[in-house]
Amino acid sequence: MNEQFSSRPTESQQNAALKKKNSIIIVLAIALVGTWAYLLWDKNQSRDTIALQAVQIENLDADKAAIQKEFDLAIIRLDSVTNTNATLANQVTEQQRDIETQKASIKKILSDRNATKASLEKAKSMVSDLNGKIASLENQIAMLKQENLELSQANTTLQGEKQGLEQDLSKSTAQNAALAKTVDIGSTFSASSIQISSIDVKPSGKEKVTASAKRVDKLLVRFDIENRIAPSGPADMYLIVTDPAGKVITEKGFVLPTREDGDRSYTALIPVNYEKGTRQKVEFPVRAAQYNKGTYRLEIYHNGLKIGERNCPLK
Image (cartoon, rainbow, N blue to C red; front, side, top):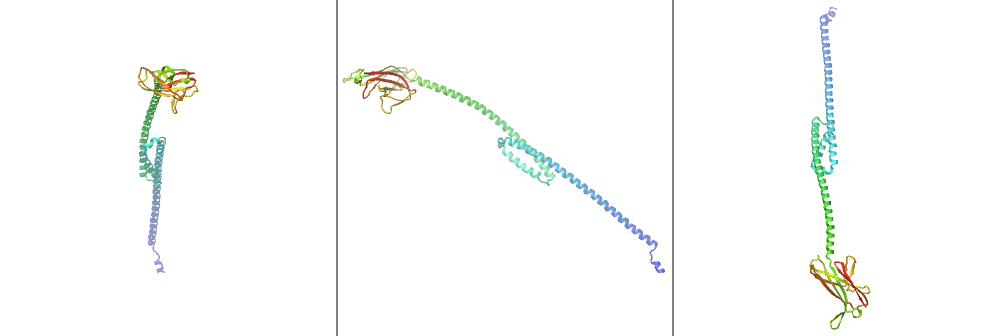
């Protein structure tokens, strides 16, 4: 029994065990509290990191949206320039090619969902440079428009001057034509002292005027010509002699284009070497196979105009 009593822990041993147990509990409690504190701190840190990342993402989205808006406005401005002034813009195609390349680069950055702040800054710089190029393009097109306006005004002035010159030329041409016609008509000879005589030629060669158709051997035409403005030189006189039946005494192919009477067959062409300022006599015999009773008619033409006429009746 004494041995059983002696195996029980003493009070001091019990107290020591209790202290040890309490110490373990305290250590575990402290560790648990530390773990909770760490977890709370880590959670707060994660929350702050997430919040910071959210803010950064929001800022990037805002920057991206601002750059996109500025880029869209630049494109609208560029389209307005190139569409409104397509013809003029063709003269600055080199700048347009650079702009198109830059537009493609900016679009590539803005379409990237994972675009970084650095790439967005690059895009922003490129948009600013793009606006500068568009402004340069606008200035060049404005200059071209002004040049075209000045050229158009100069062309309008030249067209007016040309029209005025054409009108003056047309007027001068008409005046010259009228003057030339006047001079041409004025250079037509006048005929005076016109005679047409029926001649009987005797065997001896002596000539006698006769009114008998059966005795006529020839019709002798005489007249004087004169013109105060015609120059010295050759001039052609045309004779048309028509018999009583209205038939022209002519040879085949003798045709005279007249100014007022159309084309007419003629009897003879008499070349005259005229001396300016003089009155010159012309004489020409008209011969036919036979002469009939009735009236023969003589007409004289020069320069397409009739300048005299005379009748010769035969019995």
